[in-house]
Image 1 (tube, rainbow over the protein chains, first blue to last red):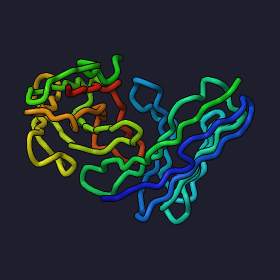
Image 2 (spheres, rainbow over the protein chains, first blue to last red):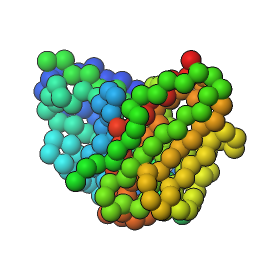
Image 3 (cartoon, rainbow over the protein chains, first blue to last red):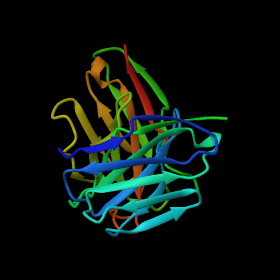
Length: 112
Length: 116
């Protein structure tokens, strides 16, 4: 099946620093999504991207849908302690179910 | 408006027993997706259901696993004769229609299954 390569696997940063993570795929997706998952919880949608080249912001978060439709990145500016968690990228397949294919996640630790 | 409700939150089963996981979608949502998450991994698609219909079960193991979404009541993911490898977090997501542009699915908090 399809796989997404998400990097880095983990990041340790100081509060106030900017963060960048990305996902690449061997296949084309029509939609890219970025989720955050806190321990013991389900994923929460942060940003949805629907058009190749699209750049979208949500507060301190910015994400882009790569022009080739095979990659996406997420930036977090001026990180704060509550940004701690695992961030997942997901591509939405162009199939009847439009199911999501997830990356393995980037675990973010923010030191105050 | 309550979110996607999954229960139980934690479930412990002995090898060979049956596990039944429930998912009540958000009000007005008739589409349900089930995903499985192993430790340190991303979520993997299992099955997509609409009311009374299985649309895509390409991610479901061929044996022991089944899912339903009846006209009334929650969606059920059933695992028969559980084995240790079934231990994982199982997430349900619901949407008002087939997901796509401007239609996202919302996830529940998951059921953590532990097989001992």
